[in-house]
Image (cartoon, rainbow, N blue to C red):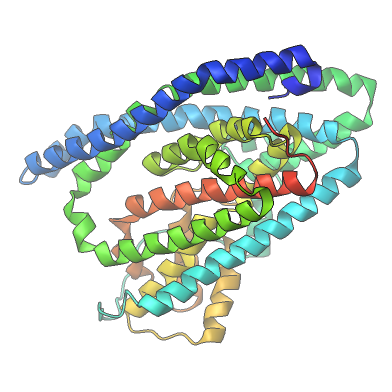
Length: 432
């Protein structure tokens, strides 16, 4: 990761190692794809077998499959906080000045805000064009869903940014809070000069060790993928695809359009190297898609972006921020799903109200990436704000895992393009 600063011999050794491990990387990707197919097949037969069985038996049969995915995600989350802290402190300390950090941070946040709005607006336009909820004609319900609301107050929003305790933030994997502490720590480390250099060297070594642990953990990805796919299909059955096929198809069309926009921007920045970028991020993207978790791809994505040629200091700065502020796929889903539910109950919202909803979603979605089913939590709060029945979320609960797969993969691509853009504008994009 930071080998390049220590000498040409080590850089050459790293390049040689990457060439040697290329077949292994391809094998892992192939195993993940095979595991997805195997998981769907196993899930189909398990679902058929459990069709007329008691609910307790269903849970006992499906639990081992869910356990495979849960163990993998726990292993990944175990890595994230120390990886973000060590890489970000080293990256900031090596920037050399607060002005440099502020310049890159300003550009990064401008990019995130711009693409958050593009993602939200695309979801709004598509749901108004297709109107997938208009055929539902649901009566207004009396009860809610029990899903917690996203906090809209300034106090709650700020609590997701500034940590009370960095130990607590790391324990809960609050990435944004870890980032804030790491920024302060990195700037202070650079400011104390020679004494800080010792800390940078130690944390640089820690980062390398964590990345080695990441390589070990990623070997379990195919098993996690098999378990995740078998669990979803085993519980819901393939019929869930046909029941909601229209909604799922229109949402995934929206994701493909968003991916096209992101890759078109990437092509403007790096031209034909965009295809090389896709080869580098295909494995993290597959992991995110099959486990329905962007976090699962984070450590591997960091490694692959550096192998693509992104400067390690910028990767370690932009990518953690992106996981709190730049979830493009999730943003598109929030506007798409919120207006879909309004359509289901025959509630018509004018353009001004819809734009207000976009602004609310943009604010309330920031900094809650670590919340379970974060998109549903944000949507619940937004529905309540605009007097739309929250019970409509029950329409999406069954298919949310399938939708989350596409959201997670799109988030990976969005953060990859953002990181490449920052490196390009800073003149820090190298040819590997």
